[in-house]
Length: 568
Image (cartoon, rainbow, N blue to C red; front, side):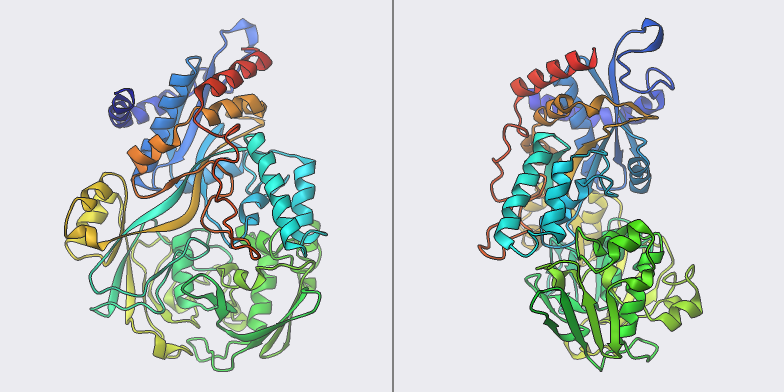
C-alpha cells in the first residue's frame, strides 16, 4: 500500500514540479546543502536533481520517485527537481554546474571500456569529476598497455576497475533501457542492436515500400563530426557506409572495405576498399576520404573524437594530437593509394573492426566538404553526400521529419528493397500509440502505461517487440564545489547512502514498464561478451550488493557517517 500510495503521489506531484523549481534553492544564491553557512545559519541538506524533460515520458516519473525515495529514507534531505531539455542538462553537467543529475549513456562499441573509460581522470564524460590514480592505471594498461594484448587478463582487470567505481559510488546505476517497439504487419528485416546503431534498415521490407518511423528527438546534425545523438546517427548510417557495417548479430562485416589484413603484432590494419562504391554525385569513394575525415575530427571541437584515443581505438598519435597539441597530419591513418587504407595503432584493439561501423569513423569527401564549407556541410540534401543504401531527400537542422530515399547508385542496391524512410518526431508515448493505431507510423516506441495497455490488447500485442536499447540510466553526483553545490557529494558515504536508498525494481515495474532491466553494475548487461568464453561481462548483477542494492539499513548507516563527516 505504501508503494501504491507513492505512485499516486508521484503522478500528482508532477504538476507541482514547476512550482518547486521556481522556488529554487532555499538559500538564494548560497550553494545548496551548505552545512556551515556564514553567520551560524541553520544547517540543511537541500539538493537539486536535474533531468531531461524531452527524453521520454517516464523520466519525469523516475525523477519524482527518486526524490520521494530519498526524502523518505533521509528526513534531513530535501530534493528539488529541475526539468530542462537534454541539451541543457548536458551543458550543466559538462560545465560542472549541477549537484545531482539523472542521465544516461549508450554503448558505442561492444566492450566494457565504452563505460569504464568514462571515469578516467579528466575524461570528457566524467561528470562527477572523480579521480583515482589506481583506476586510471588499470584503464591505461587495459587500453594501450601490457594488458591490451592479453584478453583474459584484461577482462579480469576491468572487473577490478568496475569494483572501484561501484565501491566509491561514482555513479548510481538505475536500469538498462529496453525499447517496446510496435511494428506494423508486414514490416520485416529491421535490425535492432544495443550497440552503436539501434536500428538498421538495409535489409528491411515494408508493404508500402516506404517505412514511417518514429523518432523521439529532432535530428540536430548530419555532420559526423558534430552529431551526438542516436537519432542523428541513425539517419547518417542510413546514408553512409563506413569501412565495415553490422550484420544481423552486430558483428563487423565488410562494407566499403572488401577485406582487411592485420599485422602479426595486431597494431597495423590494412583495409582494401571496393572499387564500385561511389558518392551520390558520382565521385568514387577512396581511401583519401577516410584519411581526410579522421584527420578533420582531430582539428574540430568534436565530442566523439575521444574514440580515436588510447582509451578506445588507440590510433597512433591520437592522444598526442588531442591532448598535447601535436599536428593532426601525424595521425596514424594513410591512404597508400585510392583503394588501400593503412591504420597504425598504439596497442592491439581486439574490437577495432567493430569500431569502424560507428559514424565517427565514416568518410567525408574533401572536395565536396570544402566546396560547401564547414558551416554548411550536412545541413541539407544539397550539402550532404551519401555512399550508402539511402540518399537524403528532406532535411534541415533540428527538423522533426527528415526523409531518405533509396540510393540507385549504392554498390549493394539490389539488396535494398525499401523505397525510402520517413521519420517523424512524436512527443509522448500516448501520441506514439495513437499514431501507430491510425497507421501513421510503421514503427513506434511506447513506454509506461501504454505498454500495459498493448499487452492486454489481443490484436496489438502481436505487434509488440521488446528489444534492448543498450543504454543505461544512472544518477551522477558532482563531487566538486561549484555554483550549485558545496561539494557534499565528494563524501563517498553520502553517495553510497543515496545509492542504497533506491528501489530499482519499483522504478522499472511502476514507471518505465517497457522491459527495461534493474541494473546494479556500472557496466550494464547484454552488450559486452567475452571473446574467449562468450560470457556477458555483467551477467552477475549481484556482485556489488554491498555498494548498490535496495538496503535502507545500509543507506541510513552511510548517511549518518556522511552527516558526521560533513558537520550536519
